[in-house]
Length: 95
Image (cartoon, rainbow, N blue to C red; front, side):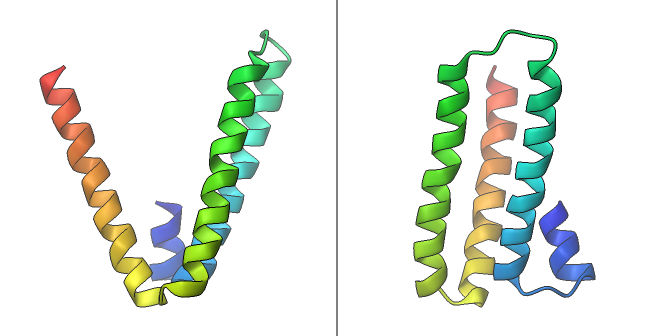
């Protein structure tokens, strides 16, 4: 949702908006983790996995960012969001 606002209302290029959106999500996640760490025990193995996967995605995204034009990136992201929406609906209806 933040990405759409940044692109459509903020007028940012897609590549800049994606990076900004990821930074906002990281800050929100960090604040949530800090709040949760104060009241519960933490499974640090799980936390390491949650940290590693986005870092791997950043590396892959940086690679693709240099090779895929912004317009195609916008279309690919749109299809990805649509695919995830269909997956969630199907999963919810079946289970």
